[in-house]
Image (cartoon, rainbow, N blue to C red; front, side, top):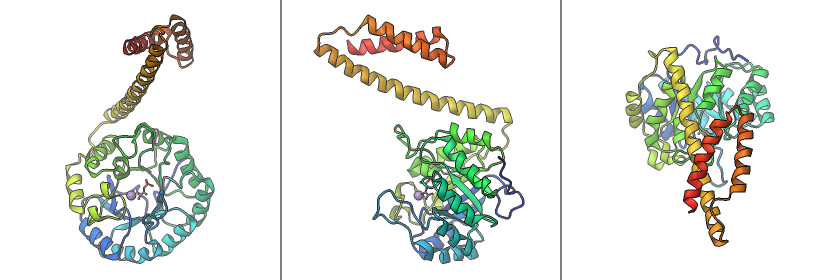
Length: 352
Ligand code: PEP
Ligand code: MN
């Protein structure tokens, strides 16, 4: 499917790259957002001011946002700075309030995108409006859930769309808050070649010192822009303290990023494939390390029960099984044999 927001005022299609969106995680007070927005305005490429009014929190009782009253303050930001406004919506009532307040960009968050009925209802409210709808990736590393949310919006007549890559919650996500798994947005782009994709390095990294590295990677992979969290007083923010940066820090970070543009198609494709290989290798190493730990535990049990580390019957069966399964996955018998012999030798030597 093909989103086509080219004729729309709030579409990213005609905006110079990279598209930058910055602002606090959450609206906390009028002063906080006016001061943040004024300090941010003037940053090259800054297109829109982001801020959350309704914060989806994991546990009740945490700061859940100021809600609708913040829309008046955001309107003031728009008048003073000329920046477009971007706000997260999670239910149709949020969409309705944003439309009435003249918000230019709304985004559907990682938790909401997976709910087909909510996405349908939000689309029904937004249909026919000028707003640009950004779709964050879901929490789970599942391309079809992300693509499904986008397709559902298109099916409901929403064509002025963009995607936001905010990383995925996976069990091996350290040191980041959410693993980038870059191959997923890369594949999304090949499914939707005309869909702008922004990266949210704040929610991927979870810490301000990762912003630079993640943002540069997004540019190197040819992403269309960034959505970054910035707060006038980050250490006293009510949400996401560790990842928010002051407008001055953000200026510094942006000024050191190398904006992709001169790179040829081949270089960019090569970078994408290499990124996939790097991530797959990381996963391979994680799995190998886990496997060795289990082998170590088996080693203890064998010792306690006076069994030899090397059990020829079990090994013969295992190798036969892995070679068969490898064949189904188009891996040659010879290759699978070599890999598993090497893994087995390492396991045995740990057990001895
Ligand atoms: C946000 O952008 O403020 C936010 C809550 O992000 P996510 O849904 O990606 O965690
Ligand atoms: Mn946040």
